[in-house]
Image (cartoon, rainbow, N blue to C red; front, side, top):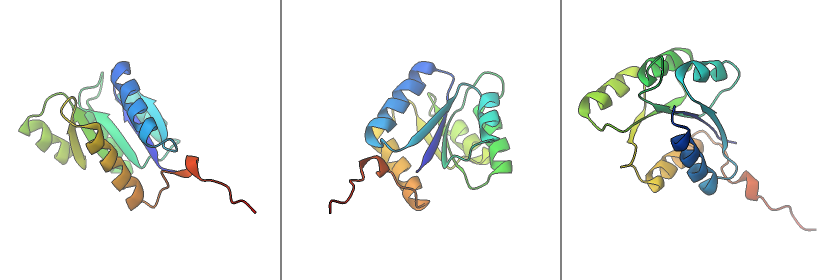
Length: 137
């Protein structure tokens, strides 16, 4: 089963992102954190395949948290989320270790879903486990 961690201070955005992902991938395991410290705490006991990280978080920025995460687990895919699609943010995201950058409001749900699917498939994780039909004898 593929596992995603949503790190976003806006509960409204977290909820809409969770709903979009759950509708497309019912078997996807999703956890949430509202700030960087909570995300780092969750990562002590979990190992997500993919992290969606808001760039602006209370306390530590998403870029700082991403850098810490990548120092501990270089294999995890981190996607930076922001409302500001400016070249400086993209460059900073890449320097922090993020593998991708999505702009809130401009990135289509199809684009995000395709990215999630590609990461989970690359890792050999099943996205359809909820729909497996038992064999009939």
